[in-house]
Image 1 (cartoon, rainbow, N blue to C red):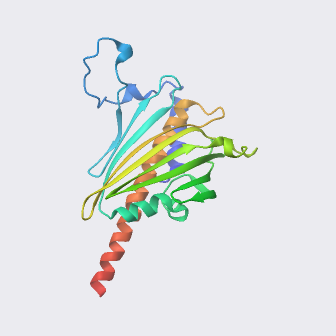
Image 2 (image 1 turned 180 degrees about the vertical axis):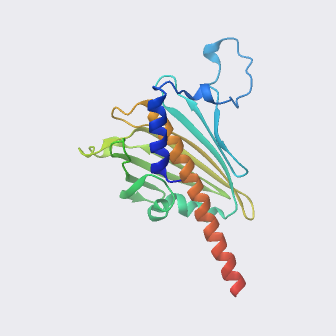
Image 3 (image 1 turned 120 degrees about the vertical axis):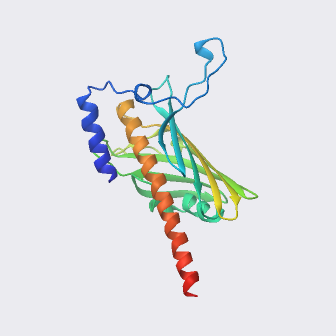
Amino acid sequence: MTVLTDLLRIWRYLLLTACILTFPAIATSDAPNSDFPTQQSLPLPWYTHMQNEWLWIQYRDKPDTGFVEIKASLTLQTQLNKIRYLLTDKKAVLSWVAGVKRIVVFEKQNDHQVQLTILDPIWPVHAREMLTTNSLINNTNQFTLTVQDHNQYLKPNPNRIRVERVNITWQVKQLEDNIVDVQYLGYFQPGGSLPAWLSNEIFLVLISDSLTNLKAVIDGIESAKGTTAEIQ
C-alpha cells in the first residue's frame, strides 16, 4: 500500500470520527508502572504503533504541544558502514525515506553538514521543508547521527512551510559480525496550521514506511552480494 493510499484512508477515517480519535484511547501502554506519588511526576507512557520480529515503533504525546515523539528499535542483518551510508548520503536517503522530494546540502565540513530537505506534498498537506544541521559522531563499532533544526541559517521559501523544532537521533551499533542495532528517536513540529492529530498520523505512517523501505534496501544489497558470491 502506498503512502498516498494510507494518508487518504487516514484522512477519511478521521473526518468520519469527527476528530475524536486519540492515541491513548486506541493503544495499550507499554510503559511499566511507576511508584511516583503524583500524576504530574509520572513519566509519559509509550504506546506501540507497530511491532514485529525486527522492528518496534512506539510513540508518546507531548502534552504541551499535542505532537508526538516517536522512537523505534530495529535489528538489521547488515554491516555498520552500509547503514552509515544509507543514513548520510543524500542520494541513498532518497531511496528509502518516504515523503522526501529533494535534499540540498549548503555546507559540509568533516562530519557536519547543513542541509535543506524538501518534503513531497501529499493532499491535504501543504508543501514543507526542513533546514537542519546533521552531525555524525563515529566510535568503534558504532555511530550517532543527530539532526536538529537550523532555521536561522536561511529564510523559509514563501511557497513552503518550514518545519520547526526538529530533534532526531540515530544510534547505530554493530552487535555481531552481520547484526546491527538501530535506535531512532524523533520529534518535530510541522509548522503552519496542520492539526496535531493529522500531523501525528502522517508522521507515524511515514516513519513506518521509511523504516520498512530501509530494510528492503538493505535486504536487496545483501541479496545482491550473496548472488555475486555464488556466481564467483
